[in-house]
Length: 202
Image (cartoon, rainbow, N blue to C red; front, side, top):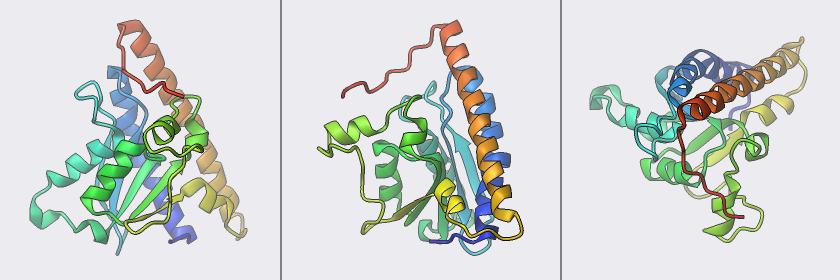
């Protein structure tokens, strides 16, 4: 796990500049607010970023869409998954966790947890119903990868010349930004009569 100020600053920058702008455009078509990006571990360079495109295909969740973009890169330009960092704007659902596992990434950093976006979409329901976990949780540390909540890593930092407070402010701003993105999604799907199948089991 990397929880340095420089690293967390970079993760937030990628969400702010590389993921959220794409998502803001695609929600206008009725796609959801979830997105992802891949960075190199050695210098945090952006490999690719993408967003939810479920109006194209229901399985194109944000992370899946990002993995598809990553896999489409020429082999010479595509670093090995174990040399990369997987970023998700929201804690990955069961589908995306499986896809990340099969693709070979050994780490996941997400900004918002299941609890943060439960009012929008409850990703714990499949975990409860299919995998029999009454809490709708999964093992964030396992033989395949480790996953970390960026917002929590920021909150756990020790204060350093106001830089922790600045990062917390950016997390809060992104929370508001994504609330706005989701509002656009809801308005568009209602106006266009777009129905996106959702898992509703308790």
